[in-house]
Length: 78
Image (cartoon, rainbow, N blue to C red; front, side, top):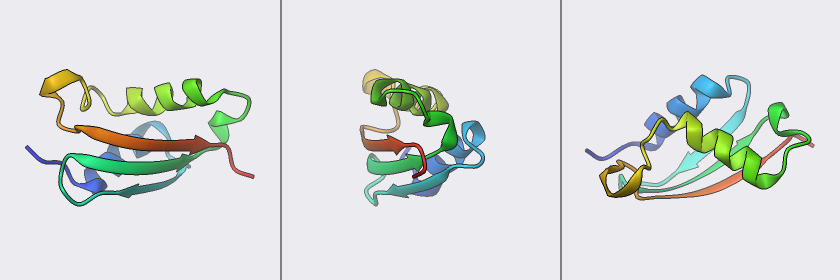
């Protein structure tokens, strides 16, 4: 089942309710997302992106994942 950008944003928003989240993609399986959240302050990029991936609740897990590709940019607010 193909996902919508709004579905991905909703999943991320559950874990990062105050974040600025932008998700783009229109083919149902390839997306890009930018997540800007204060909780990322002091964390390295890997830690930030792992937190976002955890918020996706397995939607990218292996060949059975609903999301094939997600280009991810994460950072703390400036």
